[in-house]
Image (cartoon, rainbow, N blue to C red; front, side, top):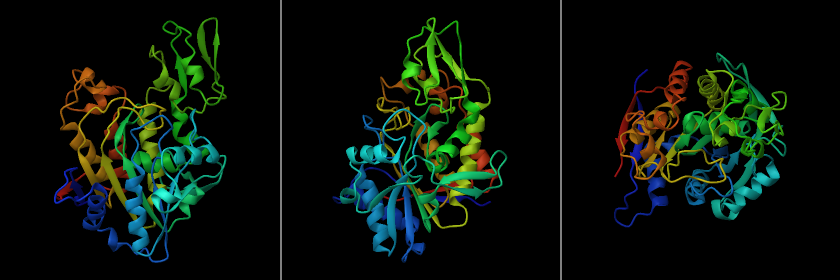
Length: 369
């Protein structure tokens, strides 16, 4: 497969051009106008951010994409699917409230905001996919109803996948409740009883009442556990871990397979912004300091090449002093994500996506001033 083009621009403002205007120009330069939007429904998949988190993308960027689609004759809507986690995004009503509190309303973004898998996360479409792990992906119905699919991604770190990029936004983000359970099924956790202090933080971060504290030790009911992994990242003692040592590897491969299910057989376009690169996902109700300086905005028709380019750009940056990354670079100075989360390997997911035919890791970076 020949190299894919990935278009890049930095956050410099020349000739008083605003960042929204520059994003519009980037999308045009990358070829979005080659898609036929006329009277087509266009899903713009993004993350609205958990309330309390301030690292998510501003609604202004979503407005750029929505207005552009309308100008090209399309019918855009912003969408995301519900989560398995504690927080305001586990059902559509609270999810919409969270989106509004973070600034995503029809008035601010210029289009409707639709939760892709319905009120309780059960409104799904089963999509056939030829994967090693997934044969029938469970995708939010409103995502699959779209004629055109656009991803708008905040590129950041992630405790289970190394980083959260375009494939994470698409694959995990578009999975319904049952779809997310399928992707997370290998992550069911166990507790190191010798290290547990019974603080209860894991229990408080479990959305499914699967954790109780007995005799000062956390106990996990695996029949209730969805494998979301929130307790693993929340444990201050680092005494909770997946039962399967290959859990993170399997997770990123399933995410790639779900991404293929979402994007196959329809026009797609992908945008990723490397800014406010927090070490953890925007699903957290807080965000740590950025690990690197802001880099820029990228766009491509190839989600694999886009993630690879973003990862390469991040890994070339010097960590910000006093950030979590600056404390960890002695572990793996050439791979910032592995330095922070040593039990993850993001490259496995991209290699698997390439094997599936979702895209290529080979890219030509085309810089736009």
